[in-house]
Image (cartoon, rainbow, N blue to C red):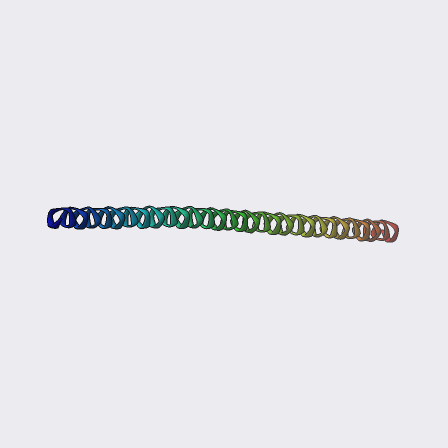
Length: 108
């Protein structure tokens, strides 16, 4: 009877040890699953951040290009206006010179 009780006791202890081992394995598996999930979530956030940064950089480059183009257009426009003013002045000077020449001829 004592041997039977000892056998029962050993069986119960073995079962308890096996259960504890299984629980430990389950906990480890759950922890790994959670870690994988967290890693995936972080990777997604990183990708989103990278995409946002890229978008911002592209927008900045486009704005710079637009500003450059506008500055060039203004410079070109200013240069054309200056050239037109110079041509107008030259024409006026020529007209005045012609008038003065005509007057001098008349008086001579």
